[in-house]
Image (cartoon, rainbow, N blue to C red):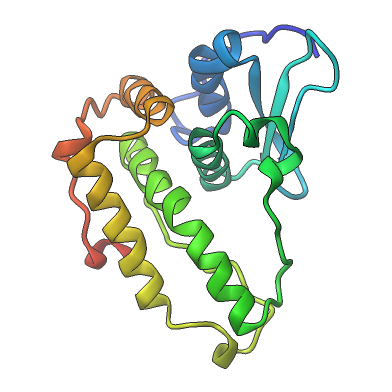
Amino acid sequence: MSAPEHMSLPSVSDPFCCKRLERVFDDCFCDTFRTRLFGGAEEPLYQPAQAPGDYHALYYRGDYFASALHEVAHWCIAGTGRRQQLDFGYWYAPDGRSGEEQQAFQSAERRPQALEWFFSQACGYRFRVSADNLGRSQDAIPDTTVFQSCVLEQALCWQREGLPERAELFFDSLCCEFSTMSSPRQLHFSLVDLV
């Protein structure tokens, strides 16, 4: 994979163009972490570099703005060892998870979804918690209000204690790109916002 080409700014009529996120990610991490962000994937995936000199690739689904923010959140949390493994070495049970599998999924998703909430606010974009299990009957999905509370609790914790280093850099860069110019401590997090 070659070095990134910087894209021109998207039109004002589409403020939530994913190419903006790709450009911000490249500006933040391409040189220092040799990692690029790409859309167009059928499913999200993190692919470590295949050979010396190659770039690591972080793929998000289609051209979905929220998917791009979410995958960046996973990348910002992943440690050095995880960033050397396909999809960070995480398991993923596909849509249609059992109740127990769904609880394990939600436990693993608390931190990335809280971080995605910060990134969404930096862009002025509406955040929605995702239970990501549409193929199961309603009785197999744990109460999403409990999951929402866990995501809120993690967001408030990071607001008090500070964001992880890469996440803070990306957050600040998004604020500049989207002209929101906020500090994580100034943001508002509430369960009401998730309804």
